[in-house]
Length: 135
Image (tube, rainbow, N blue to C red):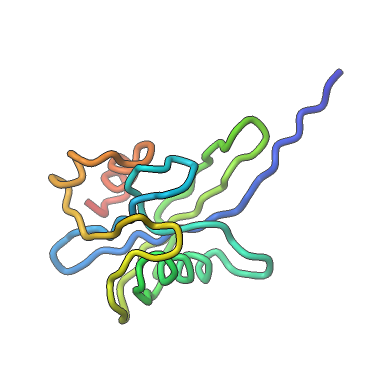
């Protein structure tokens, strides 16, 4: 009998909205889902809380400092055959900073529902945003 091990990698993302009801999205330049738009986020570093990781990743990818409010959803995203990203997404709002694509983001911007419907989004992002009441 063969044992199959799956590595679980913790990740956190920030669902950042503005006064116009738009959502902050980054264009992924790396796998998984390179070339798709999504909310800013990434791996949790050792000893880091999920909330701190969401805020740090947002700053690194967008140049914006955010205040994290509450978790709005979590999901599992397979990465190959032996790894699963356990992603926790948190509602957040901008505290300060200048919007600029950084780290592994190829681009960054604010988008409303209508604009998002025409974008290549990560798997079911529009669904998560709708079901959570963000959009």
